[in-house]
Length: 377
Image 1: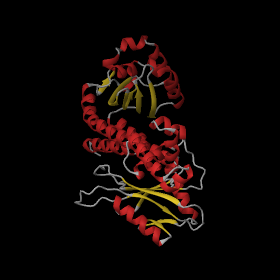
Image 2: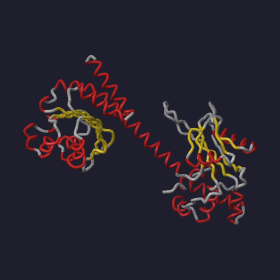
Image 3: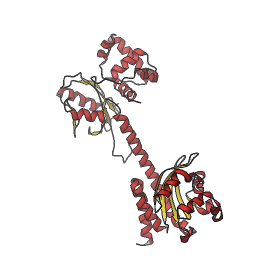
Image 4: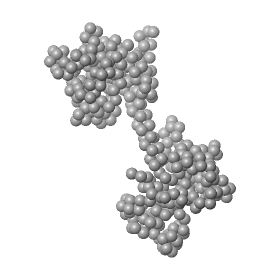
């Protein structure tokens, strides 16, 4: 393989590792080979008051020595200290950090010489966010010699791609972390939540929705046609609400969705169903484009209705919080009024006050807001 082909192979390995972190050892091996290095590492540095390396992947180092390095000696490493002090410097080498004479007198290098059989180091890094850097470090043994200007020039070509790969990896990793958080948050909600795309196909079901569908006894199922109800009458109404929430090409009409109740084959109290449009703009390349949220609330379940939290977070009175709790549990406003022993007119006035205090305009919008409050802390 030519030198040019080897460089291209390393660049390709950087981008592959950015998409799949398990590939960093292979990328480090290719990088070490093309730069004449005997060892290499990929790291993430938390540059706080006490620098930490929460991620550290290496090749050709003694594992026990690296464990001691991470747990004890990394903060006293002059190169780590230099990186923390110079987070925007793309390439760092020994000549910038410490002289060879000072190495021989430094306690860190005394430890390093005894446990880690390398002498020279060259680092390429990128600043991903304040107080966080990431990069690769290349190491040579004393016999191989220091990194010369020609080595730095070759590494500078690779570093441009390393920097881009790290930025891509950070973005993908952040999105994955947010997706995991979102999934866990939705799974913590006791209501069954379905997210549909603009063709009404189900993109996501939370844990309660999966249980509801798998039970097979409550007349709720999904297919390539979307979320369906066993009752034809109620299903027609549900599909109508979903259609009202779907974006229509070229139309400027406001998307609304709405609320309904649905009888259950089991004879239990009806579901409360709330359909809301999801109007956010989606990135061009995303495969996840939810357009409609459908929420089933089950009045048979013992609801976790945090009345005090409703009052504290939205400034509701106790009476308003009780009405809000019933609405969030899927009760029709007339039924809620009967349960609270107030007139329907009073309930409507009270609901208007709740709308104002929660900055919502419709019952479905209010329910979606209140359901977020019901997630256990």
